Each structure stands twice: as C-alpha cells, then as structure tokens.
Image 1 (cartoon, rainbow, N blue to C red):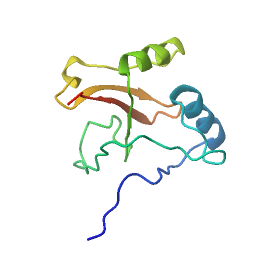
Image 2 (cartoon, rainbow, N blue to C red):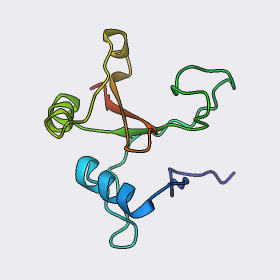
Image 3 (cartoon, helix red, strand yellow):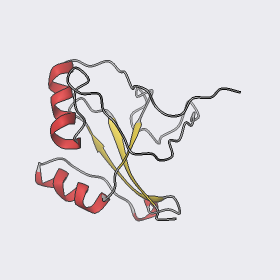
Image 4 (cartoon, rainbow, N blue to C red):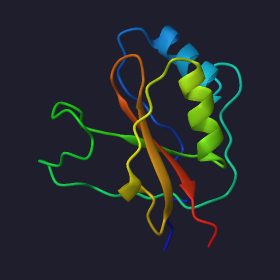
Length: 119
C-alpha cells in the first residue's frame, strides 16, 4: 500500500501573504517558497483530527493549527521573547512526547512549537 511520508505543503488564507511570509522567515526561519523550498530533518509528523468543539486551537473560528518541530525549545523561546513575541507555556505541556510552547502569528493563527523528547 502506498502512503504519504510527510507534509508536502501547508496552505492557508492570509490578509497580507507577503508580510506574513516575512514574519515566518524572520522569527521561525521558514524561507518563502518563492525562493527556496523549506526542507526539514527526518522525524515524526502527527496527523490528528480533533473534535469540532475542541478548545486546543484557541479561538473557535480557527479550523487548523500547525505544530513545528524545534531542536532547542528554550533557545527558541528566548529568541521569540527578545523579538517581543508572547510565548505561552504550561508545566503540563512537558509530556512524555517532549516540550511544547505556543505563539500566534501577526494574524492570530496559533502555532505550536515542539521539542521532541530524547527517546
């Protein structure tokens, strides 16, 4: 059986696509697709539908949330906070799967950051 082997793209609506792409490049290091496609190191990607009434994504009008894998969450948090970006963490987010934090892009879209556990 054939199966997908990762995320090939993530597409979403934006009020100002160019400005938002620049924000993602500046703060998360994701190159705009027009220049160089974003490449990632091998690792697990979770594909998980959530219940329609979940509070996990934040606002009810938000139909999606992306999770980005990072290698050093503490360093990423320091970098984001130095740029004036609010970072949400909770002790219960340090789970068996690793450490988590959450930010929002300039348009209010939730972004989960994940440092996988060493196991």
